[in-house]
Image (tube, rainbow, N blue to C red):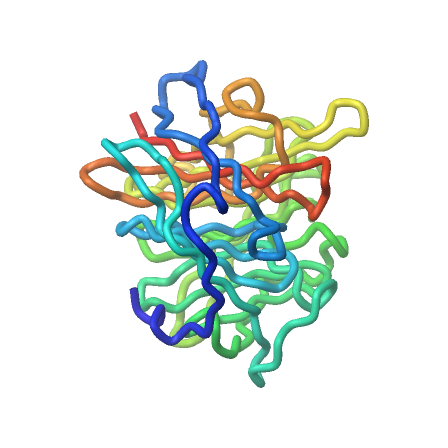
Length: 307
């Protein structure tokens, strides 16, 4: 992967000290086959808060944290099953001048996508913006914001960025209403024009009471969208939903079909990252949760194969 050798990084030990296996049962719907789950030991790296996620065909997993950091590790499989992580590397995200982003409003990274040319786009909340990185350890250059994103709530901005098969970008806001009404959420389809992006407004319709938290493009031209809800008495619930390619040919509202319910198909947590990659003849789907730096929450990693 281009740029990986350029990353100034910290390494952590692989094995049980960083990840422990977690039981993962069969989902109720027949779309995904579980390959395993891990409970990640985030104190080993000094941070959690994972949001956006990317999975490469060589099984390199990359995540960004809402604490202004990037994180990377290879997934270890045995006989096709997830058993652990290889050496973990991580470091701070930086601004255009190369200065380390401060935690809080400056470093609240929430969405991640890798472009066909090897560059990365990282979306931020609180101070709504998108930065383009040649590598995640280097400086990040600002790119055009989708129209209207600056009006999103402080903590409800760009939660999802994905690359579609036709080269377009799909972006989703967490709490900004879309053009299809107050229950919809703002979405945009982006077309690369040189170093810039031309954004076309659209709308996404999440399940009632849920908000989009991430997305990943699929080889068939569609996408998987992760949605989440939190309530004081009900805790966290989420779903992973399939957005068909045909739906993305128009302005929406985009409607997705549920593939996973979390719970009961997987543990209840603050699910915020989804990624897709083809490996060994299978299409793999990874999900990660954000522990909010809370002793009451965990960072969990799930791996599925598309049935």
